[in-house]
Amino acid sequence: MSHVTRAAAEDMLGVLDDNDFAAIEATGASLADIAEAKSLADGTSDIAGQGERVLTGPTKEVLTILSARNA
View 1: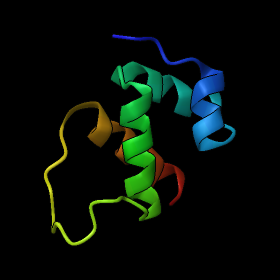
View 2: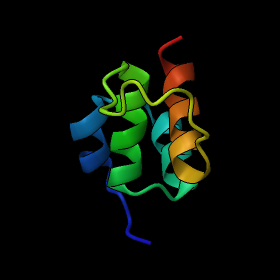
View 3: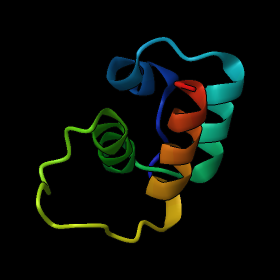
View 4: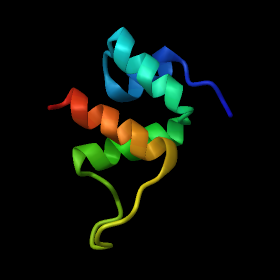
């Protein structure tokens, strides 16, 4: 597992407060997981037309964090 730095996460997601960064870090997500979750949260996933898909693991956890952040 590679460690995601705060700087790398903020480059992708914008400014994060301490709680959001700690929650994302705790998921063990990679930068690829974070990028996928952001894409899904923004509605820009390149898997258009594929219907619903089941997310698991770190991507799902990061998506949940991002969704709560944007609510």
